[in-house]
Length: 580
Image (cartoon, rainbow, N blue to C red; front, side, top):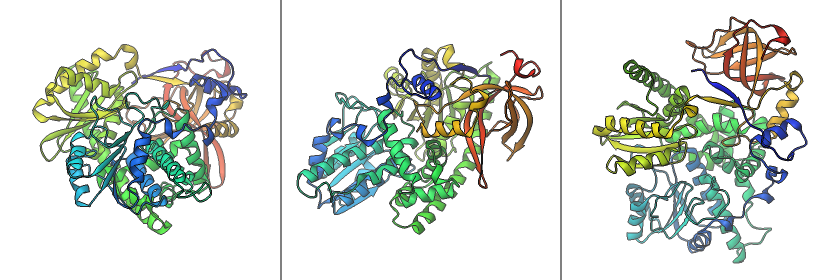
């Protein structure tokens, strides 16, 4: 699919940074002043700005000597939230802290009645949810009937009516004035633990010198925040930056060090992108294919030996996940081809279903198909009760949860459950309604989407001059992060002469390129290309959309272009005078 290359607009305003390139990058990401670039902990938002915090902390102080069960979610945010809360409570003197992670295939998401029953059987006196719970009415009611107190910490969008919990902390609650609505579940849990530490200090249980040092938890906060792909507003950038700094200094949990090892990454040079694309998928593999308790145990591991064993287990699961995903993707593409055989184009809203698809890989599958066709996608599989469980991924301009809300308001009996965010959501429907749901979903997406949203626009930060295509520039860009959702990593475009090209590893296109304006020769690589349809570069010239990177191999460091998109130039290359 040919994409439109468009450069990010540069708003008018005063300079926010002395470096011209960084100033351009920051201002195009809506940074308005230098203070917004502060990544020190002193600029972190105050925990007491979260509504419900006082009630939550007062509740927690009553249960220091009682049995507490933390109910997490089965993704990386849920695992990090769970591990962080266990570690923090134990360090604060809570005597009897346990955790419970629902099995995706048996209990499903969140604090369901089945999970509540498990907590009661374990003798829980207080249940704390992390990264879930704000929609768990039935599970909370079950616990309350059995005399169990409930504290909900969550970041997902709440329903109109909240569960009858004893306390709820969620920046997205109506009336909560906390300035950052983008905290991940692990961020909310971290804030609750910070406020609890302050309360216990006020109660005289320790002073500022003897209190536990919660900066030691920031490595976990950074991993969960980046893994959950929440917008990196200033507060989240602070959390991610501080946590990454600890990881690079190897002052982090053994489990994170072990994951970095099995991913074959240099921990001293680790980036937010490495956490998101190499570390988080291995942690997520536990929840996708097995049980996320493995991931929590990894983060709680108190020896490198234990952590390495668990990390290798997760690495094996992740490899199995990749193999399953590849097969499912091929089947999904076959379904898409069948759809286009009946009509000229794919529907604007793509809904796919195969009964035997693996539920744990549906989200990745939907994301891959969304990226390929640039349309909102829902992928369904069938559970043991014959219900279709779906995972949805969206494109810019379509808020997936709001879209599903619109479907639900028009067809109240169609969706059994749904919830999520702007870009990702989960839902379930009855199998006989699948074809009708396909039609309804496409109708609502068609109302939502215009031509611009379907063009697959690639936003770039313009060109780099030949002198800027250097290791020094790449290092400046690395240090300026962390980059991520809503604060995108710098992407540039430019015209290059393709001097050599070859396939490596069957799916990667390796190139030797030279800038159109002249300059040094550069290595470039495009990962995971479709070998059947990558552009014919026999004209020896192409416009590349790329990230500037450093390739480190056997002690050598060379600048490298990580190519996201290749568009052949129509005319033969004519050196520096080629028309743009």
